[in-house]
Amino acid sequence: MGKSENRKHVQRRNALADKLEERGIEDQNVLAAIRAIPRHEFVDTALENRAYEDTALPIGAGQTISQPYTVAAQTELLNVKKGEKILEIGTGSGYQAAILCHMGADVYSVERHEKLYHNAKKILSDLGFRPNLKLGDGTLGWSAYAPYDGIVVTAGAPVVPADLVEQLNIGGRLIVPVGSQASQVMVRIIRVSENEYDEERLQNFKFVPLIGEKGWD
Ligand code: SAM
Image (cartoon, rainbow, N blue to C red; front, top):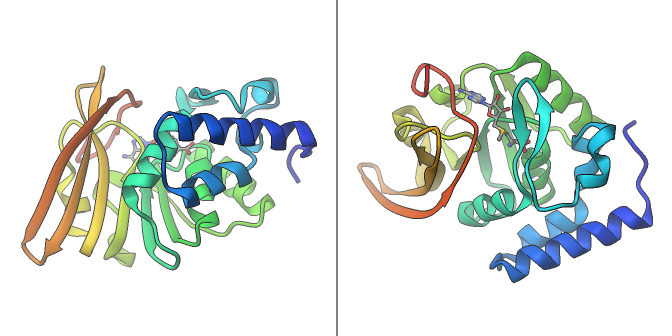
């Protein structure tokens, strides 16, 4: 099992969810998931005290667990409904996957770093979550289980990866940060029919790079 859960953790999670709501997160299912998932389980013990700050934190291999506001904003944009099949690219710590599992999604997640893949698998399993995890290059999606109702990319891409667009269901949403390695704009693509897509460019964010065949070198 992971670290212990105490009243202080619950209070800090509630305070964090209140703060995210003040910052503009409206989806009550997303806020409920933030209140429920023990983010301190997904970071090193030395960083446990900072787990409920609205900030990204290191998780090893030069990677980060995303800032809670970013997780909440991406999840809200995904517009997740119970039972939907959701693909995440960049499992990282496993925190975003846990949020999606808590919301009742059927979760698939791909990570390219072996150590992070194994760590996330263990933490998620200890917490009772069983998403489908894969070690590999997520810029190619996960075609074996396509199409998806939603795809969320948690690393910054140089361009929208075409394979991910192709793996969307009709009505499916792709949320992907696109830009330079210094800053990206959040792009939401909705597949409205077999050959038609709506694309919106939203807020700016800063993610670690999406590295792979259809990403950065
Ligand atoms: N969603 C994660 C969480 O909840 O902790 C945050 C992930 S971190 C900001 C981005 C992750 O994307 C890193 O773990 C990185 O190794 C991973 N990544 C980068 N390029 C990737 C690729 N092509 N395929 C899969 N994972 C990738």
